[in-house]
Image (cartoon, rainbow, N blue to C red; front, side, top):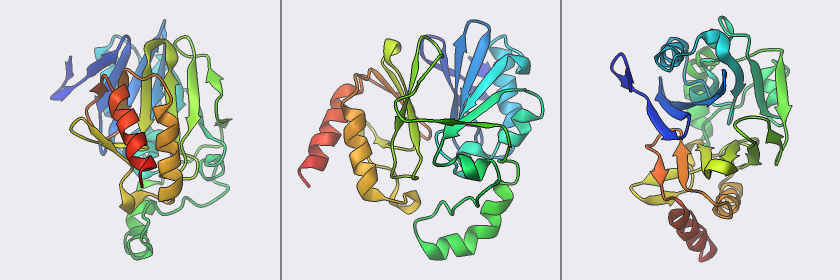
Length: 239
């Protein structure tokens, strides 16, 4: 399925991966309601609305926006979406204060020099990422979406990074908790990861889930993902 020159991919039943600016986002259709995971960079809002239209939905059908973490390529498009959709916004409680404007967004870079050099650019990208109406999610919380969408806290890339697990479909939306190199999985990119040790622990946790489809924000989905997750955990255990 296409909208303009962009391809929407159904990665599981009624779950769609949509390429936007800087990343991919995910649309979960549940009856007449739609849940969005992440928002892409600023400028992604119109692309998400066009994708909704291609799926036969209006902006008003967008009821929830779940954020995996507060890097600009995942939350930068939030303001555009809230300009047209009265959706509930939710992020893990550790990152909610920044989204409410009560704390500063930290630099996405692990290297301080890059954070200093690119700070003005990052701040521009985050201008529309704040909203006072944000719901705080907790680890292991079961959200009433598509029969039960579980919040899985996966710290490391950021302190409050969260993945989302749809057990009935054995679908894991992993955000930036992992990277895919072909059929091989590795941890998140070191340049943008605040705590590599915690990221390794999070990868081991994800490997305990029963996962048929692994969806990551910057890669094509990996079907039949369980062996790759277990191989990653075993590789980490040998270190």
